[in-house]
Structure formats: structure tokens, C-alpha cells
Image (cartoon, rainbow, N blue to C red; front, side):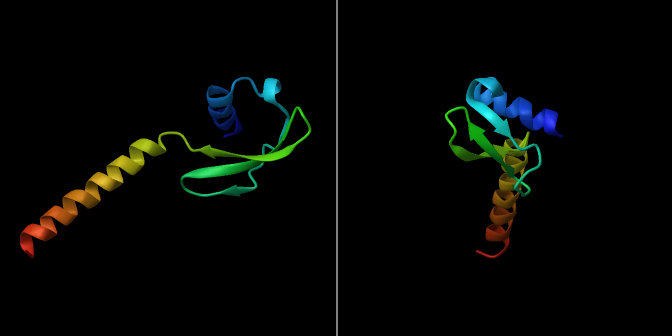
Length: 79
């Protein structure tokens, strides 16, 4: 899973070594939408990186579309 998270970070922020001296591969926190990793910038500042999990946009859009359709059906049945 780290390879996926690493590729997302590098896609958004560029090569890890250019910006960070350290990123903890073990998430500090993880949820269904994103996870958070402790990191240290090359300047020495400690930061956290919130990484959105892959394909979450598509999943959220599908869920929201379902909710929209269900609400329209309920509105039709119960005006």
C-alpha cells in the first residue's frame, strides 16, 4: 500500500526527496477517505501529509448520485 500512497504524494508534490527528509510509511491516522502520515520537510519543519485514497472521488460521486436518486424517488412517492 505504501507504493500507492508514495505515488499519490509524488504526483501532487513532486519527488519525495525534493521536499521531504522523512515520511513515516505507517499512517498516523487512517479513514475511509484519506490517511495522514508524519513527515519532516527538508527545512527541518515537522508536518503531516493528508493523502486522499485513490479512486475516492469516483466512489463519493457514485454514493452522492445514489442519495440524490433515492431522495427524488422518495419525493415522488411522498410529495
